Amino acid sequence: MQAIETVLQRMRQRKSQTAIIWRDEVISYSDFFERIELWENRLCDYQITAGTVCGILSDYSPQTCALIFALMQAKAIVVPFTPEIENEMPALQEIAGVQRLFRFDENDEWAVEHFDESRQNDLVESFREKDMPGLIVFTSGSTGKPKGILHNCERVMQKFVKERPGWRTVLFLMMDHFGGFNTLLSAFAYGGTAICLPNRTPDAVCQAIQQSHADLLPTTPTFLNLLITSGSYKNYDLSSIKLITYGTEVMPDATLQKVKTIFPNARLKQTYGLSELGVLRSKSENDASPWVKIGGDGFETKVIDDVLWVRSQANMVGYLNAPNAFDADGWMCTGDQVEVRGEYMRILGRKSDLINVGGQKVFPVEVENILLEAENICEASVFAQPHAIMGQVAYAKISLKTPEDPILLSERLRKHCLKKMARYKVPLRFTVVPEDEMHSERFKKIRKMVAK
Image (cartoon, rainbow, N blue to C red; front, side, top):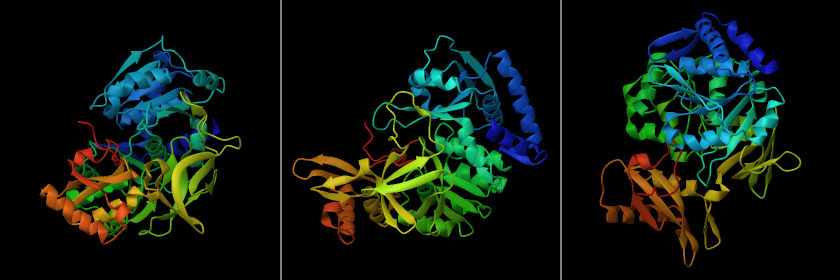
């Protein structure tokens, strides 16, 4: 386990430097490794060895982070869960074949459940022969049953072997998706500080930044827009932030410009990754631009029919419950439509989100950008609806800063859109919904109506 051991050795050298800030507790790297060693002893007591599938139900905490590193050293297979998806866990546990489940409460106390009779997945069984630590994460399941994704942790850690500057990182992205797990590893691998959040409201995030002097905020465009509309940033000193990375969805131009105003000292960087491929190196054209160059060591990209394909050295081992996603040469179609300009590309959105109005393409983010420029709009989400004549038409759901008459609002927004875009792109219907129906628990925009 060369990559993992290299990173651990680097972490051990940090000693008195701050590894974790959790609530009001500041934990050094020396203290962190004491927790890791305690967990290594406990794993023996719980009969956890190489290849044991171990679920963790928790948000980021000192004990959770220590357990993850102890499990990797034990060559176990880690399956992170978060409280937000607890009701889905029975099905996800069955897919992964979880044998031990660690449940952590808000005070970082834990309990262990044993599932010795769990049916084991064929891919996991074959992976055990490699004697490597594993990671299982799940797709969101927005288009059907969630897919279990198995990664080799040694391969995942390889990108962190080259030493880089450490950051005081806000652990915003949840650890049960690849982006969050990647953030967790990078926070420690470079000798930085991992800053845990009590929750992910704009107030809580701003307060954590102020108190910890965080300098890196990895987040989503939807959360940044929520931060803007909440006004919470006005009540805190956020000047310590030097870098904001955003990904998981397309960034609206209007949001990007406002974020630059709120964080004048911060560099803004678009990231790109998929759970199946890992997180690619990226470089934004500039802070105010949605154009980005992606790839770098271990990654290759190509564009076929305006759709991005990626080949990665950090590819998943495979799906636990779905067919192989790669072609014979190791390339995977991401499903993301892109424009290309020299070395840079602009990600327009998932091909599956594309709205086909009588044969003419409408990208939701294009319409959302226009709606966010209108008065009194907090958030906008545009999506396809079937239509007897046109095949599909655009619908929009919006959240408002202050209440407004629905009929007058629809007329106002329709006129606003017609001034800036072709008639076929203008949503046929505008529906006002509560703000919490605009995004998932991961602060990713929901492009459909929420069933009542």
